[in-house]
Image 1 (cartoon, rainbow, N blue to C red):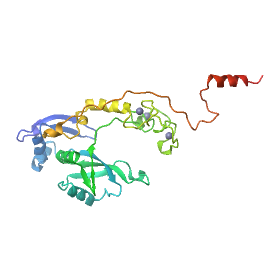
Image 2: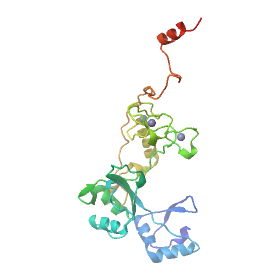
Image 3: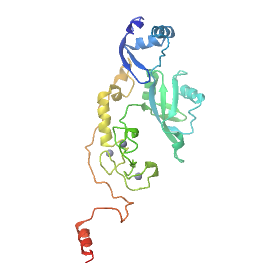
Image 4: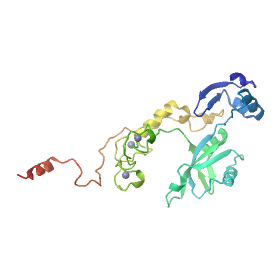
Length: 280
Ligand SMILES: [Zn+2]
Ligand SMILES: [Zn+2]
Ligand SMILES: [Zn+2]
């Protein structure tokens, strides 16, 4: 396959097999990537591969927080207006979509986070550095990084709900056995991951979540970089690991729905009281 590339110096640096009959090609330089994007070179390359393969360019995804939910993200006109407003060449924003299903937005919600796919790293980097202008607002996008996976059934990190061994849902807010959307425990909060009663299980400041993020950052170099690295030096900065508070375990708060018939711990005094009422 390396022989397929016979342009002015471009070379393959690595090849990795992905799912669905895809392969990921890493070229040796920015110039090589530009070379293969050129239509005649691209066609010649694909022809050498048998003519049935296609090249899908890399997309650079960034998160735009606090976008008004009245924004019509399905309209091509919205994309054009976003490109104009931010001095971006037409067609460089491939698409933008809400991260959370819009039908699940709360009735009082005014803004939501959106994921934007951009074709050039330079464009994505300028938005990350200078902000994303929309309406009268300057929003502060951030890179869509790999994050630890968390099970929506048992709330623990490291696996997905489809692989969960737990039989019942555990609430992400209060850890009682119900789905988080039906949670009515207004005062009870507990994190199953660090066993602490100051935050729910999906809290991004949870020391256990930060510890998993730091482990992921150690093995994924781009996760430590706030920009998409290019030949420009300012895009090559790396962030230090997030500061990590020590994990302080607490007891789970009492279950506000426990009835008298359910088992609960008794004090010694209660136990003696029970003993004295045993019928003779
Ligand atoms: Zn699970
Ligand atoms: Zn709950
Ligand atoms: Zn926690």
